[in-house]
Length: 296
Image (cartoon, rainbow, N blue to C red):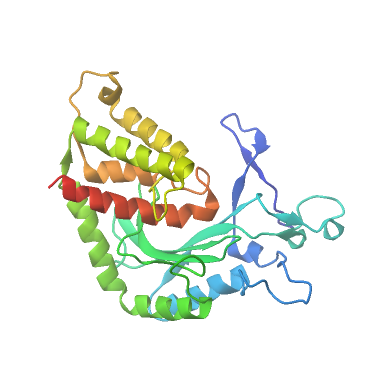
């Protein structure tokens, strides 16, 4: 019998505690669902996560071939019904997950090549449901979201999940055009050179935005990263370009595409906050696309 336990193997092959783990959709379907006292689903998650994922699968699969990625679940806010698992071995039906993310890949030569493939990103959080259409950079499994194709059932631009499914159906009809749009942006990024001063300008601006958001609560202020993520971005850039920190005399030559991927590699389930993962990817894409204008 398959079980769910928050452990992972370290570099020595030893089992250590894990904050997030990947499970199959089939395993997720064996877990429990949190209900209100009157037996109804909560207003923030009015449909079971696995049912919603299946509905999205059905919509996209009606026109194209798809491939379901694992579902990443977090132990944060996860609940256990211990009477259903008296031996405490991680029986799936004893778990209740409210926070998770996954992706559905669209397969076929039209939507995948050696570098990228198209997908639909889905997230469930305490606030509600997230869905985004974008591209995956295969070599690093980095998610890319452009064109405002990110939607939620909460926040200023919220929509009911039923409307979200309608939009998903509309976007499915437009998949070739969406992929063409996204690849055009990524290819533009590749052609834009970035020097060390411009890298410092980007890091400085993102850091200032993060500080304003964290400590000054500026109204309508959106930072593409939080303070911790900016630090990780700086680290990633420094590891790829040691000259940025005076650790190498090699000339600093990079592209906006590489800088963009330095950022997107931070936004992964095992490295970032799962509840804002696709929102963070969307905000980072919007920011870099805007920063592009200052380089031209």
